[in-house]
Length: 398
Image (tube, rainbow, N blue to C red):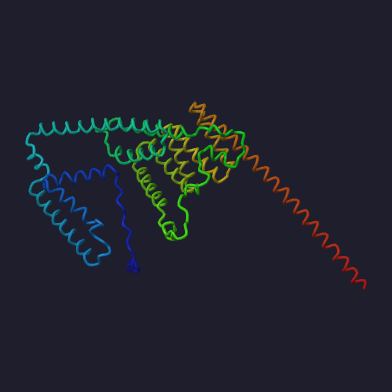
């Protein structure tokens, strides 16, 4: 009747979703505010703020000292905040800035100089990043390149405004297109394979899909060596890294403004799903990436997304669906005017056609075998039922 829940439960806390730029702005404002009123003691305030949730100080094993230290740190930090509010009420922020530099023209000049310095330094950093990306692509280190781009674009470039980085859109296009071209460089038919072979895993080798994941395991069970024992409740670090990476990409895509950045993020999410053998999620996200690539007219990312769908269907041995996706990939490669990609897709189509014919042959032989076994079973049943009727006639005559 009161509309209350009588079950003791923990209320779910709604997480405040802030953009990376807003988080950085708040951190910078906190530091500037404390530096203005506390001068050199602001570093102690920052240390005290971090101590409130520091697991090295608040050990869960200490049942007596941990609650006391938790209350002490929060109480002292509250005192500092109250003192800071008193200072701010006595002399506002704009007044303190004017006291630091009475001449407004000089202050504006220093501010412009500082912003120009940051802009020039940002430009130098961007040139260094582009040089490193091109070197990694030339060396063929694709994993290192993708990891480097994710760190740079997710931690550094995302914090830059158009005042500091007016060429941000051009830089994003250059970086993501270079990464896409590095991905496409791998889709070249190996020299030791011919398109006429009908191997079961030939298409998987063409698409660079690992056919045996057990080969990566180097630790084997050794009797008497406890370091090689696998506990039943052992921590799966691969799954933990996958979930963290997925959460990072999903948070980034929530604040992404440009379609080419969304294409990259959706492609990486689908690729991470494919690595964990989540094929339905991979196909669904790759379809979203294809639709997003149409907004920015990026045939490169559209081609890569279709290849991801083809990989998922190939692993699941869905050769008919793989044929449709390969036809779509060929159309995209044709629109890109790339003879290498067209020849690569054509070889993949030939191998897939061979697998489809082989599958039909197996299905026909299986149907013939089933039909023959059914006919033999019916004839055997008729032979068994015929003598039984003759014995019934003899018994009736007797």
